[in-house]
Length: 194
Ligand code: GTP
Ligand code: MG
Image (cartoon, rainbow, N blue to C red; front, side, top):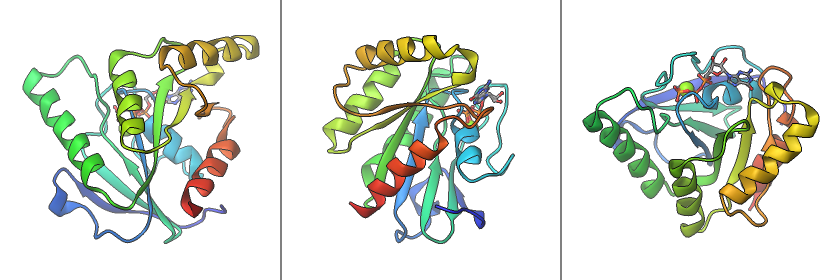
């Protein structure tokens, strides 16, 4: 998709703040600091429309980006951020779950994992949840620029095993080199026509 027009359509924590259901939605989920906002910026050719930060916990609301009036990218707050209270974490979990369980227009869940690390308990839960709800997860392994080419394939295999994924794709991506961007767009466009 050629992307020129993108804008932040809505920001919400609760359902009544979501935009009316119309355009198909692609949701981005993953651990805090994994690179969700950076991936969204990469896909829409913008440096910083989605705010990023070296500090985990940057995105604390659900942000809906309108892409070419054709679809919405949904930037969800990251899970598993250790430095916040239990109460705060429970609120985040509730926010993410409320979105995922109630959105009819959700077409694809992009689950991000850091290519350098073994998937964590939350990553596994998220992938299992996506599958249990009838979606095929698109797993994106972020920060691929931090590894050599040989290591990339090795780590993809490790992630596949860690998530017990059989056929779902795992696409290495780097927001620095933009490696993987075309493949991710292909998967998104495929999900839109289904
Ligand atoms: P939260 O909003 O806190 O959940 O984080 P996020 O998942 O949106 O992560 P964000 O995009 O803010 O990126 C976190 C940090 O990782 C930033 O310092 C980014 O510059 C860095 N980062 C993200 N993607 C990449 C990548 O592909 N390569 C490298 N080298 N750094 C990356
Ligand atoms: Mg973010």
